Amino acid sequence: MKAVVPAGLGKVEEADVDEVEPAAGELKIEVAVFSINRGETFQLENPPPDWRPGKDIAGRVVRAAPDGTGPVVGARVVAHLPHSGWAERVVARTDQVAVLPDAVSLEQAAALPLAGLTALRMLRTAGSVIGRRILLTGASGGVGHYFTELAAASGASVTAVVSSPARGARLLELGAETLVYDVADARGPFDLALESVGGESLTIALSKVGAGGKLIWFGEVSRQPARLDFFDLFAGPEGASIQHFHYTSSAAEGPDLATLVRLVETGRLHPELGRIEDWSATAEVLEDLRDRRIRGNAVLTLGKGTAVTSSKDPKTVVTRYVEAVAAGDLPTIRASFAPDVEWTYPGDLPLSGTWRGRDAVVDDFLGAAAGKLFSSDVPVVIRLTNVLADGDQVFAEWTAQATALGGGAYDNQCSGVFTVRAGQIIAVREYTDTDHARRVLFG
Ligand SMILES: NC(=O)c1ccc[n+]([C@@H]2O[C@H](COP(=O)([O-])OP(=O)(O)OC[C@H]3O[C@@H](n4cnc5c(N)ncnc54)[C@H](OP(=O)(O)O)[C@@H]3O)[C@@H](O)[C@H]2O)c1
Image 1 (cartoon, rainbow, N blue to C red):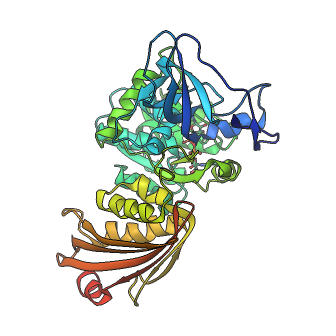
Image 2 (cartoon, protein in one colour):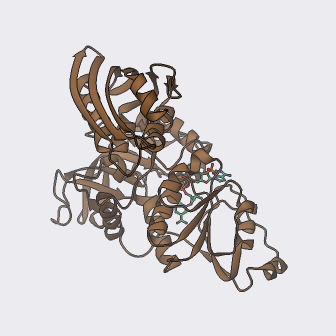
Image 3 (spheres, rainbow, N blue to C red):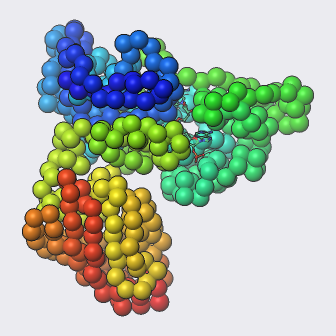
């Protein structure tokens, strides 16, 4: 079977590896999606012999545990493995998996384990956070998004340190109270600081903790050790403690994974899928993660029953996309577009012109329409009324009804010519009544 293996100097390549078979208490999963974590980029720099990367996967059980324990063949599952997950098939202990309900996609599930378990267990380690002021560094990554949403829902006031407004916008939606673009600008004192950047960031974060507070130290993404001066701690954080945190525990991962899945299913946790690619792009995605070009989690699909590849038929792809917009299903919306998609909107409105790239189309163009032009108090209703296909071109008509921020009723008819390549939309030419849009949305 095929797998992603270390290729030296932090790089990876595809290789044929031996098939694996489950022993008692283990099952075999056909992997549909895996995710990449920052820690794996570190491990790849100095990989142990016979080690392969891959901790977080989602897919289908293809062989149940020989002793009859765990999920049955065909079950959709998420698993957290010690390693070797970036492969077509993996073996997992039955206590390392959780079964997925239909409402949780394989992409969402694959993004959950390491980052989600870390956020969940760090929140437990912090204890009750209701009414507490929390400073979170490195907040725009996978752990940061999960922690922010869970802590805010538990009543904490979260100040998130990110490198730009664009990297923090989603954190505000998930409940962060304040963004700062430099830890030195965070206004303390904080009851708790969560630090994963290292170097000066740790030193400064600790200086923002109030007397008797705590700093939970859970990473060093900058790879710079911190320097501490005993006497500086009399300036505020007197009596504060520093707690080293590592997410593993003696407990099996299954129950905590099931908790994360339940939170996603019930709309209380939102995996932030900053990048969805085919697994042939694993090497490039690793580089982008290293170079801070990915927000939230990065997931790689193997083309087995995921939203991206369950059908490559152009008409189905466009129908699924418009239905995902109607349902507010962001992972499927993202997965529907190729990374280099272009969307052309007519007229001379602020939205008019050609939007290039998946992030610009989803976050800046569609996101601006949903988040900044329409009122969030009234649902946006999208109805697909017609779809015609000719080869890789699909013509779709839909209606859009919403309430503008200014209170006006937006009720428009829209159509678009979509071009689909390899199961993803690569271009859209939209036509709509821009005069109505101008009067209601920009009047
Ligand atoms: N202790 C544990 O058990 C545990 C478990 C999982 C992860 N971790 C650690 O927790 C941290 C976050 O993990 P993650 O998976 O969320 O990582 P991630 O997705 O890569 O996010 C880390 C974020 O840190 C920010 N950052 C600030 N300074 C940076 C620098 N010098 N280099 C790179 N990024 C920098 C980046 O955001 P901006 O560009 O917006 O600043 C980046 O998005 C990592 O250090 C990871 O190793 C620890």
